[in-house]
Image (cartoon, rainbow, N blue to C red; front, side, top):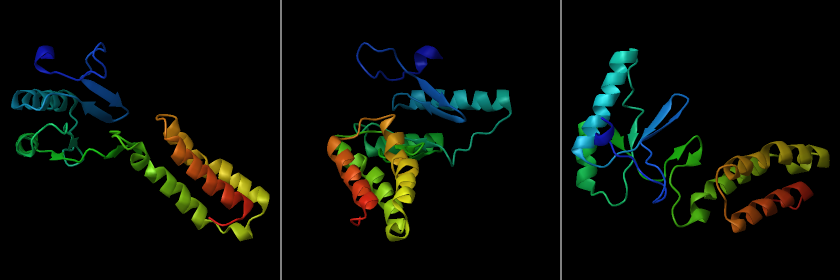
Length: 172
């Protein structure tokens, strides 16, 4: 089965990656062909038979390269019995695909920080209280994302500005 399932390479000289496993999640990479989709289906069926666990296809997703025609996406989605999703879905709270506009992709971080800061009544908090909230909550949101991705400097500066205005009481 190895030769009938092709993965992807992250660089021309990198090894082929056919799957990633994390806790109870799996990501399987293959070509957008009926043959490879049938191979993936047979692997999943074999897993179900061997383990006695049933894969929840309602929670499963297919993601395709932008070069795959929509008719092919529909065909393969029906064949697997799994819905196809848009490319900017998230996994573990992080984007799965980073496009050209990193500012747009990571705008959700700024929005989440803004919602946290807006929810706190800055006038009712002491400076020490604001400091604790900034360090424990507001800075943790971008720190998690930045542990995996390099966010644009402009976005980092905007988030830093929002946090500074909140901390010093200038309004957010």
